[in-house]
Length: 398
Image (tube, rainbow, N blue to C red; front, side, top):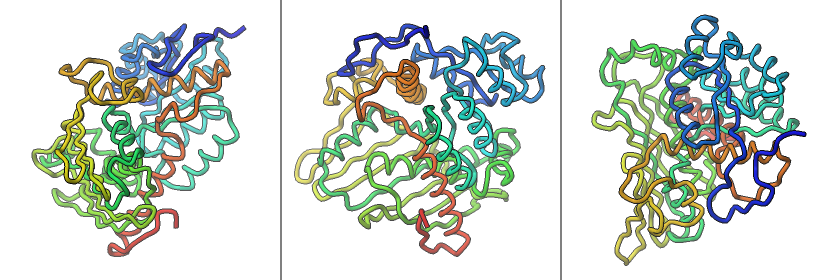
């Protein structure tokens, strides 16, 4: 009999329930982001990293595996070998984390879905819409969970922002503005780093660099909080710094369901901005604003009333759903690792429920799914097409 993970009698009214055992996590990809995500997964106390394919070089893969305290027999030299061997083990991995460069996402995800293993994949989902749609179709035939790492949606105050918008705190939305401004490509020598080189190589990164990496985060965040889908985009790509094969900056006009207008800016050459992700949504009765560099605060403005600043913490105006994702009291800061841990926590609940054959309450979990990953790829392709046509309006699902 398979060991159950969730308690027999559970309630999801407050905190997520404790597990009877940690879930087993595998990693495909050996870059910096795999270290970050593994750290976040461990923070939840719901995951243990037990296997990985970190490099096609067996020696390098084993060396990376040692950093995670993984035994040699579970340090694989290819993701295909990993999927085949793990699927046959009694103590097989419960899910796999995909943190490879973009061009490998489709192939790796496909292999693990077909092996019946749940997947958590970095964004963008794939480099082309047909590949993304193929994964979505495959997933509809397989009983596995799939999560895409739009991690910005997992900050507690982002969840609270969405609740405010849904509850009508700002009235009917009339405009949406989002920007992601960074400065790490300002020095030309930064372009020589290995993790930067592939992001500027169309064969690996796909037809875009800045938009596919951070612009897609901005687009997802705007849709997540507003609950409105992006319908059309008018984009201009620019290389504002040293010459590059792909853009380092993008300026966009956007349209959402119901004809709601907006703007989207993304760049890696905004000196002084490190995590400059800023979302502003305005409606008929007020507005909200959230900024990644001040992630623990959410500004709510209701017209004619004093502005409010809601801060992340227990018992300070946040909902019980938001409090599930809060780890420390007010005044003890949380950041991107905790947001990633929230993503891994919610995904863990979904994985445990599938393995235990338990049905979860509707709308309990809000981690980004395969459909949001597909939407992200469509947004990227529409932006690329718009830019190639001189900045004309392009429907995202056209």
